[in-house]
Image 1 (tube, rainbow, N blue to C red):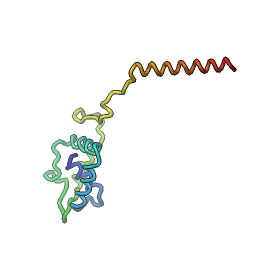
Image 2: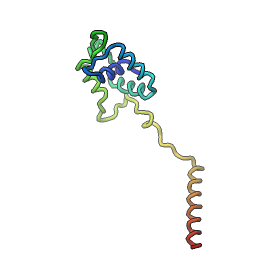
Image 3: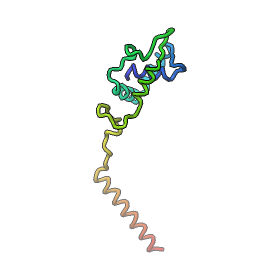
Length: 130
């Protein structure tokens, strides 16, 4: 899980983009334990901006025991989430897109063909009997 992308995503979901540290910690813990999907998603988003540093780039500011995302941070997040016109070769596609379509083993295809032939033979036999 990419901490900085997660922080931006959490802050943008709060009213006025402000969250107390306790809320941030709670939301981060929830996302960190939510499974591989979140981790893979934040990695893909972070890959669009490899030098992302939400603090030194001024994307968030610390206020009254919490953080607030500023407009520059919202624009950066929108950029990361925007779908590029052409796939970026530096960003790995999701696993489902990389896997080849599974093919049935020839024995399974043969079994399917044989079942189809037997079904048609039964249908012909019933037609002759009636």
